Amino acid sequence: MTKHFKQLALTILCVLLAAQFCFAQTSIDAEEYAVYSDLLKNIYSDDALSQFAIEKNVRAQFVENNGEYLIKKFSSVDVDLIRNFNERNKSGAEIQNQFNLKSKVNLLTETELKEIFKPERSYGETAEEDWENFRKKYQTFSLLSLSRVGFNKSQDKALVMLGSQYGWLGGDGFYYLLVKKRDGWRIKKKVRAWIS
Image 1 (cartoon, helix red, strand yellow):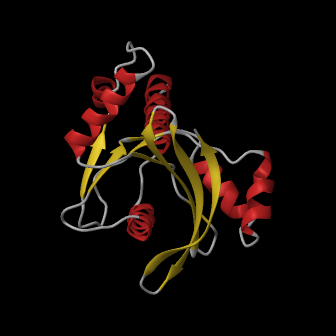
Image 2: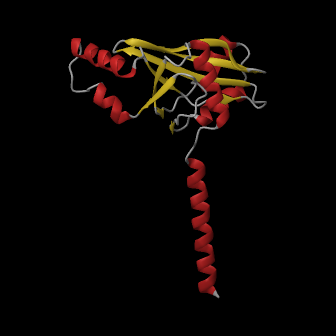
Image 3: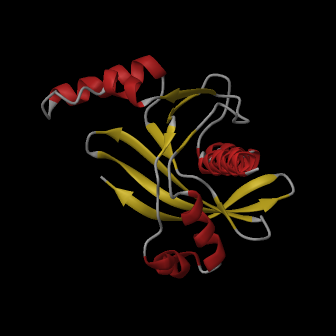
């Protein structure tokens, strides 16, 4: 009886650990892709001739100091939205090409980025050559990066950070507050997150 009890306990423990591992492997849901798609449509041209180059790995992003800066800047953002943003962004995730866009989307892995932007090169003209090669290959001006999307409790407001790098010392990132309308997500306001 004790042997069977130990086997049962071990089986239950394995199932619980497997479930915990599955929940830890965060995946991006359909509503996040809707926010991403509508954000990109609102900012950039979206047609069959356009292309996007987006980092495949979503980096962990955090709103510091409980979001006091964003609460002041947005005025209509609530603490729950910022908490959800921070919770979703505790760890990175991997973007899949599930965007609702007419434009071609190129998702670039870290390995592909290292092949284009060679870290061993010295600062200066060679760095600009890397950017020229990037633009020729992907037919786009900048490399985009996205955070995970945070939502408020009623799922009608979203917070996301979008970065755009277009040179070694050229780029910026913004937090976007979006609201859900009948025809999709619309940008309500943006606040600078970083600049280089």
